[in-house]
Image 1 (cartoon, one colour):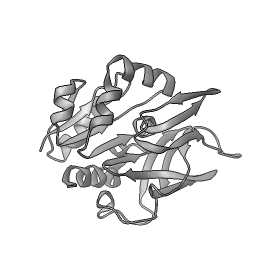
Image 2: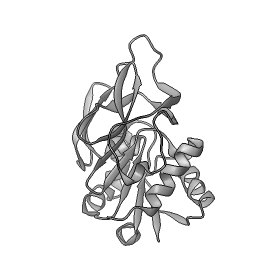
Image 3: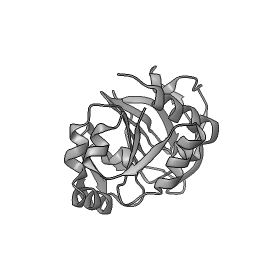
Image 4: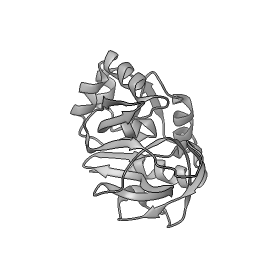
Length: 199
């Protein structure tokens, strides 16, 4: 099984690679169209601002590549958000990859501090192979100011000021709003599940 972590030019890629290595799964970091298309599994990470990240992705020619993938794809944090149609950030609308027909908006944290940073528990909404051996109330580690509302693609939700999508799926595309590589046992299980998913 081959696994490629897409070099988006704006993420801590090594921590994701090491998380898979701890599971005995070899991964490579690449922005090569040939390697990404040939991989059995693709990880799409991201950190930072959406406008900068999308500019990097487009400059590398990755947007068209991601749209063509039919194998399992997992977006992490900003990487998950970039797979949506649009992202609202800093008063502007950023066009995403369009792999998930929904939008990313600012998280309404109410009186709570923003960004949402730290451990929070998951509410499971529907079964999926990515959630194998994940239990209601398991904790994951979040760092974000923007989120997707809960909807038809939500596998698990979380609440911080408002409910939001913590894990999503649309066809061959999954996404985690949290960082599985930093989420201890819960995150390791999710990465293991992704490595074993078949379509």
